[in-house]
Image (cartoon, rainbow, N blue to C red; front, side, top):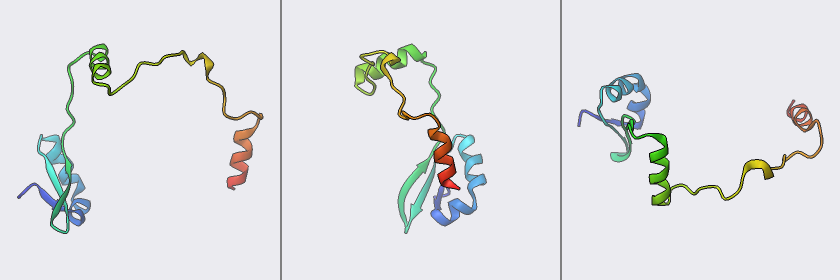
Length: 90
């Protein structure tokens, strides 16, 4: 299991792991000997964005907006809300 690292090893050898992932390998991370995560290369899609959106909509992953963004209202009703918030944090 050359592509398996404990959480401690994964932290210590993160750069090495990223080099392997960039080369196309999958890396498993274990915790107390049990696999808990996999680090793998991203899948780059050649599918155009419009086609991906239609597909995801048909699969129920995304839902088309029913209204425009014109009805959005600001959350802060008093001017200077950001300034007051930042002053409170100091």
